[in-house]
Figure 1: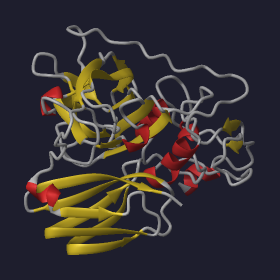
Figure 2: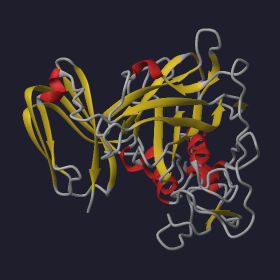
Figure 3: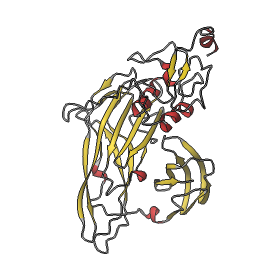
Figure 4: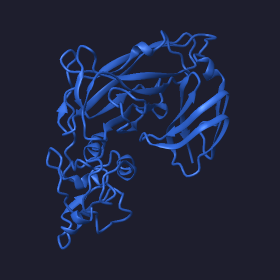
Length: 359
């Protein structure tokens, strides 16, 4: 790092980096997160000059790095905090907090070309995981699949997409995503991910590897968690769509491959005296309160919790406990407000809950 920096002594900081705008197209979104994975662990000259706190969406003077993306954008734009190295802990945060912001001039919005079903691989929710009916007040989890046996995926390094929901039936604040489990796309843990509520109808997601190696295969790459809003109308019945669109899939060079999206229909039924408890036996023996939480989260189970992990919306584990037992008082001081996923390893498998922290 020192050698690279020294070669720029005496030169002007000739670039203007807006923290979070990794692609330098004037807007911060999930495509920037994909490019963070392309530049992951690369080094270059750090910034001499810092304006404000160095992370706000204002131009920061920066030296050019000796590396660039396939479209010619310099890797210096991926160094969101200006410390001379691209990593997750410091460079993903400006993407998250500046998400959706735009420059006053020179904006070139990303174009998302939709793939064609039957011709291109599909990114979709696995509807076979759904019960026959969904009821208001019910939580459910959907696997996210990419490609299939007839049309597998080649040279996958990362994928960004948007999930479109109906806010009358699903609260975007209660939607969460998890890509931590090993899969054909993530056999070695070399990945980072994020998701961001953009509006009451849309959540943007991005998942990307970090080892500069593409993978081939098909099947589940992660899961999404949803909650059906309670509707006080007896005898209500409705088919509600959840749609995946605006997909960008890249290989480890940044080259794009077309991917088709999909729409899954949810059959929601409200019945008089309905039974909405679809919990497993271990779910029924688990109590978590309060939710939303602020200072502490209390967890009590009638079984041995083998491992506990709290994951933020960027996919980063912020709390991890091994063998915590049956009762846990989890301190939340210092954690920012937002949506988190609580993962509990039990004798019967992994249990997940969406936790909202409010300050």
